[in-house]
Length: 136
Image (cartoon, rainbow, N blue to C red; front, side):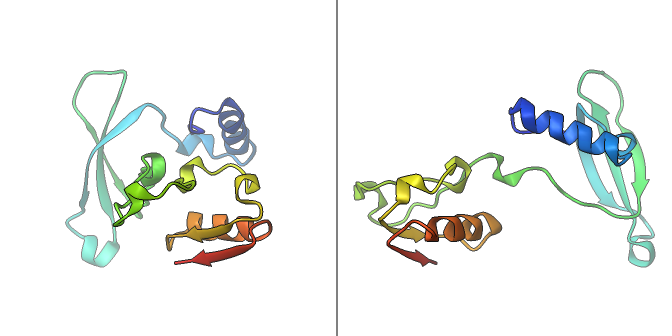
């Protein structure tokens, strides 16, 4: 229950988990070593997860789960594709991870590239202040 380095987010997540009785389901400081389908996966959908505590040495613990959600934070590292001519563009460019406010885009023509939730959120937010917005 990190919070991306922001202590307010971390406090919020901890309070939320406590309020709704979810803390017992959260294991912090744990590294997932392997995830594989159980032998009966075809009929049960179960998964076997091997994990080890990051502070402890020793063999991984194997546990069986009825469902698997991968929430590894693929957006924790920004990826900006290299578009032809991007290196010559002198205007403002940013990844949605850097986005905080629509203010820098006030009155400007804005191009939002991306099909994910973040791109949609940014496009909607910026549309209120930009002179024109294109979303691809």
